[in-house]
Length: 169
Image (cartoon, rainbow, N blue to C red):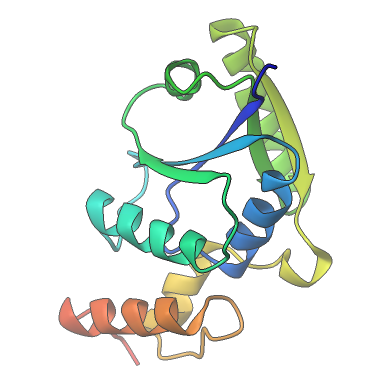
């Protein structure tokens, strides 16, 4: 029997309730789901690679879903997918802007590796506005981020912002 492996990549800085929704739903579509935690060179992360990997592992373990692994990577997504034996890359879509970006990325990825299919999952309607970048911005200005992340993530984001002197409120 062939095991269907999917990869859900992202920076997860921080991991949000929207990410967790996509993770839960993706785990139902594959036999093995690999959450690939990476760094986007265009972004300045709040947490280090190792911290984000540990945070995502903790949040995923709390779900009790058994077919999920969390792995860090710093390579092309298609190379990472190959290294994990994945035939599917899962991408969460919040709206039209996400789709346009992901559509272009999917086309490029197909040129790099035609054996890996990309599957788009629409975010739950209640979670569509959530973006890690906005969560960090709200936190920096003293806003309440508890509707967007778990309590432990909220505490970690606030502690990191305070530790690094980023608060502007």
